[in-house]
Each structure stands twice: as structure tokens, then as C-alpha cells.
Length: 618
Image 1 (cartoon, rainbow, N blue to C red):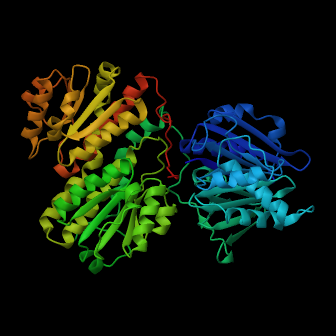
Image 2: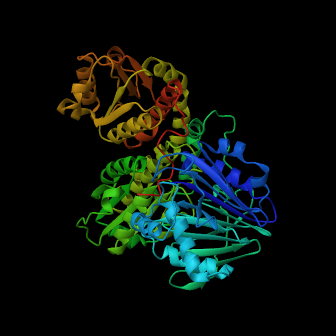
Image 3: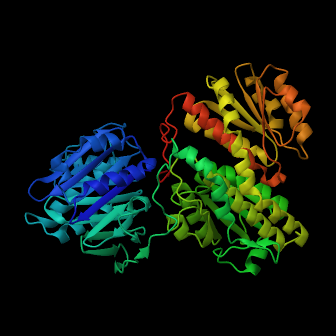
């Protein structure tokens, strides 16, 4: 979750540290801090409870002069979100300072051991345990005279005792020319500059500072000086840093006149869907094409079962993917929560392939689930938005979304891009089996209309704003749909919960009468997704059941029907498309509804309480 930055070079560290933390604030915003080092003044710490803007105001001249520094923006795991628990943390009697992302599972036993050795703890965090553990190892390794190599060996000795995940950046009081970074399960990227080096949790802070990067792998430790980088692997010893060019898709993220990132990203969806489609249509064969699956056509044709796994919004897109694959390709599909799959032992044969779906490519549960399935001999593929991410690197192959950076915590454009990619995959597998050339051509024609249809759908924004005004005080919402739009209902409910803190539930519309209908009253709006299709009349009957009990109804439909207009309190009309593409269109008004209600309730749309964008801890 948390965001980490580090700097060493000829310039002052704080401008990069603050800018980097601002760009990483989507990863956590409970508290923030920086530590800088000047040889004459030692390590100086500034920490605040709250946002990076408050940290920036608190930085004084003594902190700002250092040319070696680290910073951190926190999503709380161990200990409350306050100044004491904010990072960086000091080790020993201030001999070092570190920032940490991850969870140390054996921190309690280590803490007890260190307390018995005389170390005093001021925070409730597992991270302070790491700081004192390194200090203790340094004392044992160096004695009275400390050398830079002693620091390296102390970090290696300490992390060898850790059980869990970590991304660490560490500075030492006695060495203003050394920054150490270490990774296991929590991402770190080094930016390579001229007489300066940078460290960050992902590439976004590095844009504009350097275009050369090194992705640290698990169990690697980097010794970073302003003019060189050395990388050590736990098992392999010294390894050559793999310097790559920063992807052109990683762009500087700014609001471009929008009041919030979420709204900006909602309105970027015509372009992000275009990007997902670009270069992936094979007109001659009426199918889709992918360059990164790394499996032969024969291997893909022999697939007998597909397992889709993800978390949160990505799990909802996987549910749509199940409907798509089974409808178009006639291949059995199973959808699993990644957090459950990693601990299960489902019976899967060798003709099963596994897709991990993730926006960030760093979701801890999804990464662990893919590793487990890969260990069992299955081909693992990623549907991912971040080039160079952990999951992108570890999967056997995959498909990039090309949606561009998504900063808002509530996923919008990544969701519709995932659905677009899954639609193309369903087409691809369908054409490998029974789907005719003519059917494939019709599907392609409908897919190519999506960006324009989404653009049209955004025209409902003003109407959605008016609807939000009427229902902003509601404490509960129901979202109801059938077939492809059942997962859409789940996603709509999740969006409302995430950013407005209203309790909302999504259900298959027909399941409502098996329990949830007990919640219906005049204060509980029900959002029905009722496009034309094979179950249109059925959903309309479910809508009537709600109206019969006095419940307000908001209906999303793709045609004008007097019966819907008569029954529903509000009708939002969306463009028509094929039923298997309807979730992409229908999700747009639901995103806007959650956004507008959250604004009216005074919620922080881009940084909802208790949440972070990239879930890198279990």
C-alpha cells in the first residue's frame, strides 16, 4: 500500500521527495514523513498525521538542505494513523532511518527479543522493529568502527530474519553517500540519473526526473550512490542492474482542469477503450490478436478450462469475463477471489490456464495466487495496466490495458478497459473453436463502436447529478441486474460504498425475492439495469416487485419503453449495443452516480477513508 521515495545526489533531496510523495499519495494518505541527512547535522526527521500537503508545510530549512533523503506516505496496517506511527522510523540511537512498505509477520517475536536487548520502542508499527533489528545487527557486525560494508551486511542479516513482505529504503547517520534499498514482495524502482539516483514504489514519481529505471526483483538489495548502483541477490550474489527506458505510457499525472482524478478518468474512457482495442483487431480472420500471450495457437486451442482471478473491481470484471468466455467461446470458466485461491487447492487439470486481473500489477493476493498456480504447472497470464509491475514480470504472458495512469482510488477506466480486453479474449477463443467468421466480424464491428457509445453515455452526467441530489441522504442502495449486468450491479454498488460510504449491495435481480427484498422501503433506492435482451421482461417483473413495496427505482435502459417510464422514478437512457458489451456502457452512469453522491456528502472522492489504490499487503 504505502508509498516510498528516496534520493541521493548533488541536489537537495526534498523537492523530489515531496513531489514523489504527492504522486504516490494514492497508495496511502494516513500520514507522511521525510528524513534527510547532512553530515554536519545528522539525520533530520519531519512527520505529520495527515496528507503530504501538511508535510510540505512542516519541512523547515534544516530538513530541506539535505542531499540524501527518504520519504513515505502511509496506509496504516500496524498502529493507528498518527504522527508517532508515521514513517520514517529510527533504529538504535538514531544511527539509521528507514521507510517500509509491507507487513512483517514475525514482528512481535522480534520486538520482544529487541526489547530484552534494551531497545526502546516509541511506535506501534512492525516497521520500527526492522529499524532496531538492523541497528542491532550493525552493532554486532561492526563493533566500534563502522564501515559502509558493515551497513550492507547488517541489512542483509536483518532481512534474513524477516518473515513477510517489505520494500525498504534506508539511510545511515554516518554515511551521506549511501542509500540502501531492499525488496521482497513490495515493489521498488530505482531511477538512474546523472550524479543522482532516485527510488520509488512505482515509476510515477520518476517522470520528469529521469527516463532510465531499474526494477528491483524480490530478494534483491541495492547499494545506491550518486554515481553508481550495485545490486545484490540473496542467492546469486552481485547481479548486473538491468537498466530500462521508462515507458512512454507512464505520463506525468495532473488534473488537466478536472476537479478530481476520478472524474477525469471517467471522462478518459473513450480514449482508454480505444487504446485497449488498438492494434488488436485481425480483420482478415475476424478475430482478435495478442502479442504477449506467449503460447502457441495449438496450446491455446487445447485449453479446456479458464480460471480468472482478481480482487475488488478486477474480480467483478472477471465475473463478466466468465459470461463472455462461456457465451462466445463455450469454454468452462471459473472465477476465484485471489485472496481465497492462494490458500485453496482446487482440482485443476493441465489444460487449465489462469488469468490474473489487476490494474496495478502489484496486488499481493493476486500475485500470490498466480505464483501458487504457476507452481502447480499452469500457464499464468496477466491482464494488467502497469508495464514492469511484479505480476507483469512474473506471469508467463499477458495483455496490457494501455489505459494510462489511474490515480483515483475507485477504479473506473481500468474496469472498462479490462472488460474490453476480456471481450477480445472471448472473441479470440471463440474463433479458435466454433465461432463463425461472420459472427466474429459482427462482434468486431460492435466493439469498434464502443468509444463513441461511451462518449454518448457521458452525456447523461447532468441528469445523473440531479438524481444524486434526490438520493444523497439515503443510507442504503440496492443494485440489480441479470446475466452480463449482474456483475455490473456488483461494481456499481462497490463504487458507491467506496467513495460515499453508503451501504450498497448488488444482486442478480431475480435473487432479490429470496431475501434482499426485505430491505426495500421508501428510503432505499434500487438501481435496475434493464437493457433490451432475453431477460428484459423478467427484470421488468423484478422492478415491479420493488415498486409494489414502495421502493424508489432508478432504471438504466437502452430504449424508450412507456412501461419503464411509468414504473421507474428516474430513467437514464444509455446507447444500445450487444448484450455482452452492455456492462461497459452501463457502468458509466453508475460511476457518475457514485461520484456525484460522494461530492454532495462532502466525501474525499480521490482519497476515500481507509482505502488505498494499490493493495500490496495481505
